[in-house]
Image (tube, rainbow, N blue to C red):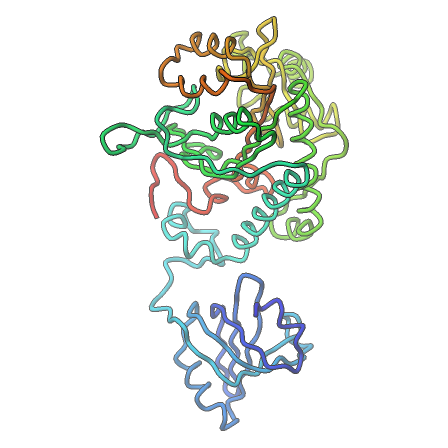
Length: 436
């Protein structure tokens, strides 16, 4: 039984387990606060009762952060702040003992260096705030998944060891694979598309991706969790944008319903559930408006992509112009994007970035599905034998399709107003961190 369920069992004997959160050993009574991932409950032991002699001795020798299994009766206790409940124990088993002082106080991290917290992540994660953060992240992914399941998608699991780099534009991690080289997957992109060439129709995957980029920013990691979506028989990339907007709206509404108040209280953040379609702007028009509204200017050579500052200002622009937190950015030049993104007859990319709260959370596109065109695009990018296996997917027919990917850790960071993905990843991996 979890601690949150105890309140449903007044005057009954229950068995619960958890960490010792606090011990108060007074003259006539002992209080032990037990904690699990669902909450806390007070265990009360009267010292004067002869039957409690063994329990008193156990608590006398107990250390905070040890783990217990407690059997006892649930009592109504209106004066107890933790839900007006206490447990009168008949049996306490110490299932593990904290052997020494913690490396830091995870309940007050105001003076604790982030690297120290990450060194002892198993301690850092014990905080109520961190446990809540991952419960919210899990709920967010659950309802993005649910939206896709409700709309006929199949979840797939693609290999993470590849014989060739899975995308252009990012460095790859090379690993020894018996007598040859292999690479850690930068994304499941090639295999998502293979599934559509195989007739799957609609697929998605939630899995790790690896990028050998020496980036030490608040939003980059060398390993991260990606939520990848791909589906067939689209008319154009607007279908992709519309599906992503609907999926995020659905998931945000569920998270808001379940955790909205807690997110305000604990993270000082607010989930604003989108209403209606997400606004869309051309890249060139964004730079024009940023200059006219906010005086932001960049060199012409920088206007073929969004600068970091332009991304940040897009949040303000989306709010001021559209009363929205989201903004789709379209009409990127094709040379800045992967070879498998479709272009129109004028060479304009048939894809987009989605900016939320001043940060890019998605790159999506209609993919090139015509064999002759994708071979030509690969050659233009200087790609040959390394992607031959991928090009073969399109030799025997493949429907028009498109998709996108969202970094789960980055999405969590923005949702909960967390400073860095270092904190929203269960275990962060970056250029200078490979442990624990």
